[in-house]
Amino acid sequence: MFSTFANPHRFMALSKWLLPVFAGLGIVMLATGWVWAIFFVPEEQYQGATARIMYIHVPAAMVSMAAYATMAVGSLLYLTLKHTLADVAAKSAAPTAAALSFICLITGALWGRPTWGTYWVWDARLTSMLFQLFLILGYMALRSAFQREQDAARAGAILCLVGAVNLPIIKFSVDWWNTLHQPAGFITMSGSSLAGEFFWPLLYNLFAVMFVFCALLMAAMRADIQDRQYEAKLARLNRSGS
Amino acid sequence: MRGVLAIFRRELVLAWAGGSGLFLPAAFFAGTIFLAPLGVGTEPRLLSALGPGLIFVALCLASLTTLERIFQADLETGALDHQRLAGLSMELVTLVKVAAHWLVSGLPIALLTPIAAVMMRAETVSAATILPVLLGSITIFLWGGVGASLTAGLRRSGPLVALLVLPLFVPVVIFGAEELNHLLTGETFGAGLSLLAANSLAALAISPFAMSLALKLE
Image (cartoon, helix red, strand yellow):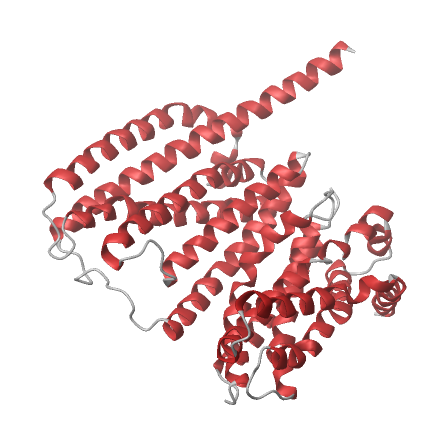
């Protein structure tokens, strides 16, 4: 299956009509999802309207992790199969992954102020999200430091995989540290399981952000491939000209 | 195996010949620890509470000072290519280089820990105080080696390496500081020490492959 879609030409042909579909779905669902969450979802019992931040915060957190997983899978496929398209996917997912992690942290801080009384607590999830953001920023910085694309691709892929192996350990250690140092210092959502009237708009918003991510990923991949094709054509012209 | 041992000896000789660079990370570590009381005050309770965490933060920062030396020179002079052409396993070569680097930079820091702990007004200081820092520094230098290998071909890689490897140091700082805190307040070994050891074993298993892959030529 990989080899079928790994052909850049086939990818370009497929993404040409898949990209507008994802982009349209993402924009429409995001717009309607926010209207649903802001105006139609009933107020949460304890937090009131503040709990509506959840409809941005939770999808951003989940899709940013999915985006990091995309980078890790792309890196693994690039290192094992040496296929450029896998690297293009990993590279293109990174900025969106960083942006979503950042959105998650910012909305988390804004949510924390009225409910926990402070913008930042060293909560286990906040902390591990912060380090995920650092890993992604490190990946982008490392890639941009190399002149040659192949060097950047291999170094980036190795770093991304080392990070992916470490991320569960980091999460575990932060959980462990948090339970030792901060026994129940904050209030969690009143109920552990969400009621249906909160759950469905959340799921809807999650899919909206997922489609936006897919659209951004495809747009970035298409731009990168076109850039490579352009460079290759330029090199060919230069060679035949001289 | 003889080739690998020769590389180990060569690395140690080079480090020794480098003169003052040898104790640079240890000096950096000591300097960081000695500056802290000047900033936060000399209140003994405060210092002993800060001590374990500060020792591990200083260890992480000190390890960054000479990281780029591990592979950069060997890559530039072509020594690494020779070692590869000689048929040596690059996983072993990189591991040996990091081991030699740890021996001259990481071990002195671990040996300094009791002194640092005394200066941070710890209650009970014994030879066991060295253990968490010793185990933690192994992990830190292995992941540091991965960062160094990824940026070996780059000029002025120092700040970049710091950004790459600092997230990987998180578990060491957490488990290490907790365990050191246990020991310095007179308790016995806790689960933190096992987790530190497990962490360094994981790093030992993964990092040589990452390093040799990163240093492979096109």
